[in-house]
Length: 70
Image (cartoon, rainbow, N blue to C red):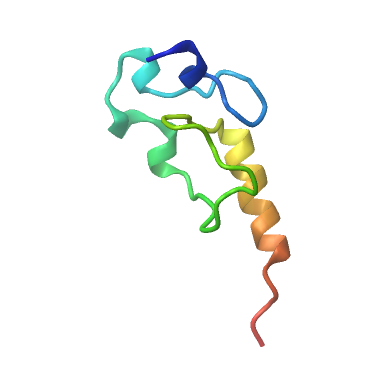
């Protein structure tokens, strides 16, 4: 895994990817994390993983932007 793939493309911190640490993808935090259904405004580079904080922020922003159902 390249160094750029180990960093969150949104904030630049280590994304804590299990694969970058030599583990199986099934052990990664992202397998248990809800993600936004809409993509971020700017596209992510290929093979780039967000960090958990950025994934949380994007999900929260999407939830705030979604009108409540009556």
